[in-house]
Length: 134
Image (cartoon, rainbow, N blue to C red; front, top):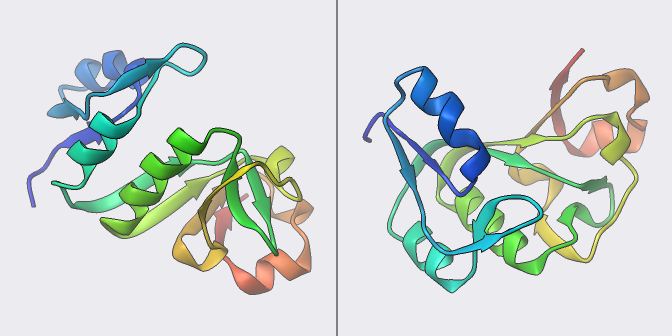
């Protein structure tokens, strides 16, 4: 695999360039509120690449409903990135646990959750998910 970053987030570009990381954008429609590229063009471009690691932000983490987000277009992009990665990491602070949003990204077992406070996570979620954090 090529040593590069592939992102749908415009907000990540400056930081990636600052560290001289070879980077690609997937293209697509710009979602103003998050500055993320979404839509059919973005999804089609993701179908052509594979990742050693994917880092995916989540709005909700729930034992029954899994990893969720309010936006169906963002969910499809994040789901495809997880599907095309050897290892997926779900990024969620302690405020995301126990919340469920409209669109499912993944099952808990599909990635390792990285969080800031393991102590605030329910035992039920700890049993069903791999978790890294403080």
